[in-house]
Image (cartoon, rainbow, N blue to C red; front, top):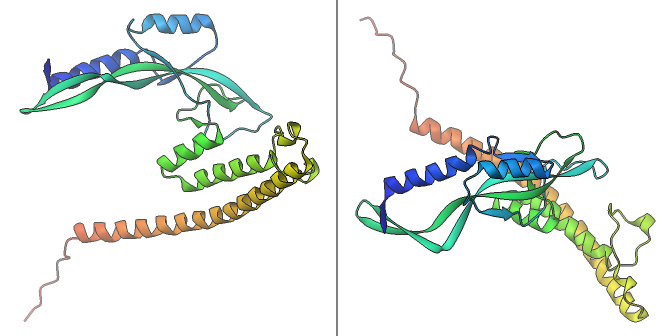
Length: 243
């Protein structure tokens, strides 16, 4: 069945409004089974339920010793590639994968004294945060997380005295499972190389930050020049000369 574009838009808006009206603040924190049950009862019965693929956290990471994990419910669009919608857009039939409003359960790491959920949490695992940062144009954040990953990898390979390590979190070491001296020595070399790579990448991160500052200034300056060219100020009236 082919739907009219305007009709399709209205149906989509109504479907999403039914879910968003229940989740007034966009993302709701829940603490008990009773709260979750009441929330679910207010949603349309056919609303899909999903679980976030990653633990999330406040973009301003809380201190490791002063954090807690809360459970949230958020409205999200869910695409169904097996269900195709055909829409008549001014005589041209366009095909879309059906998008349905769903609710997503997620674990979010916050500071211990935070009353609610952050409005825009980010992935907590370093790899996923790096991927997310690259997609959203945050190269410095991505590099920070890549450095973190390299240091973690190094800490599982090299035989470093804990007193000499700058790693904040204890990790399991490969030597726990290997007792071959030559093999451990080879792994130790690779671990030290990873630490060196992390140090070089951290230094490059500082240069990228400086580059971003300059690029932002240049962009702002170009915008000012472009706006001035597109919207020149009106010519001032010159006083008439007396003969």
